[in-house]
Amino acid sequence: MLDADFFRRWMTATSASVEREAERLTALDSPIGDADHGSNLRRGFAAVTVALEKEAPRTPGAVLILAGRQLISTVGGASGPLYGTLLRRTGKALGDAPEVGPEQLAEALRTGVDAVMQLGGAAPGDKTMIDALVPAVDALGDGFGAARAAAEQGAEATTPLQARKGRASYLGERSIGHQDPGATSAALLIAALGEADTD
Ligand code: ADP
Ligand code: MG
Ligand code: MG
Image 1: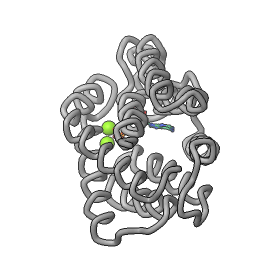
Image 2: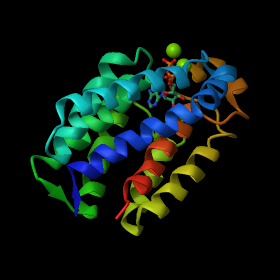
Image 3: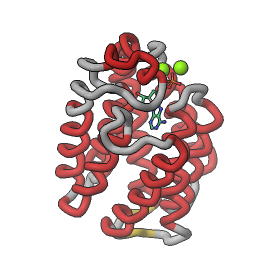
């Protein structure tokens, strides 16, 4: 079973890998965006870490709702409301259970990803974070390792796509040939699940 501590570790592991990869994320956002994805997420997840330490939420749902709220209020770019919605809606779907099973997490994340698609209007193949998140959720039944591999594969598969949502879509065909920054950071978020799973 996964308790509030697991979810706190998930968020701090995400924060650490976003910090580590911030320059790469910003570099990916440079040819097809405005070169701020790394700094946006670094600021957002740093705020998440601080808020979790200060407020110490006691349930998995409350951890994710707090994290989502921090992202929405501290990240200026498109990714803030989108990741914020992902975490808030996933947290809401977990309700106030003190511990949740992996199946419940998979189901809740599905709800969260659906909410992101509704908010941003992106579908798989539009060259966004959705291209990593949907395959990850599909693979989650086979474990965190499988979800990570699926997310990384999904992120890499955005390279030949033409963007249909977000800033990159303004470039039309010129968005082809670059990996999407948001799909890349989504793979970091999913990979952090495995890092949080210490026991
Ligand atoms: P901004 O584009 O406002 O500078 P970021 O650089 O932080 O925001 O985030 C860009 C990423 O957000 C993109 O690489 C893409 O994955 C994701 N994104 C943008 N628009 C959408 C959308 N409508 N739906 C899903 N994801 C999106
Ligand atoms: Mg950007
Ligand atoms: Mg921006």
